[in-house]
Amino acid sequence: MIEIDENALIRCPVCEAVNISTGDETLCHRCGSRISNQKSSTQKAWAYLITAIIAYIPANLYPMLITKQFGMIEGSTILGGVVTLWEHGSYPIAAIIFFASIVIPVMKFLILIYLLISVKYPIGKDKKVDKHKLYYMTEAVGPWSMIDVFVVAILAALIHLANVEIVAGTAATAFAISVFFTLLAAHAFDERLIK
Ligand SMILES: [Zn+2]
Image (tube, rainbow, N blue to C red; front, side, top):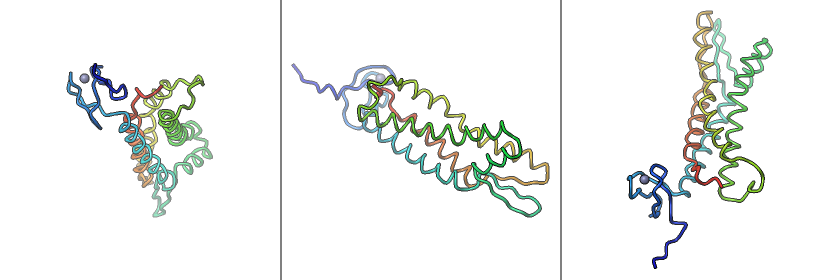
């Protein structure tokens, strides 16, 4: 009888065929799709997630909006913008921006960190945390994080008429990069690893 290491068996995510892992990447013997092994998918997810977190720092420190009015240039950060909007009584917009650019991204970072750690260490095994649900949450809210960039674009278009020039600051680029890499991290995360 041939002994097969049980850990070397991997399932093809496309056609469900069972394959024997041959290193970092195995080609499915039935349908030919690439199957990355669990270790490399976790490493990829960590790398993307760390990139996303690093990009999130300048997204909060640099101005998101730069307004030019009568030769005066003024920049405001995400949090500064939220405070200004709140003070001007634009509560719904302030709340949307606060959720989309602070609550949701930070929540996603924490969920992904938690999932990635729980893959390696047996945390939360006995607790009734539905990790699959957590994972789908990060996938589902992904595109909504970009609402912030949309708001900047819309404001820029609207206020342009009122003799005030608004341009997206460095933070907008950093924020978009952060959202993008969070999406990649969630995508790279191998859902099959959730126990
Ligand atoms: Zn296959």
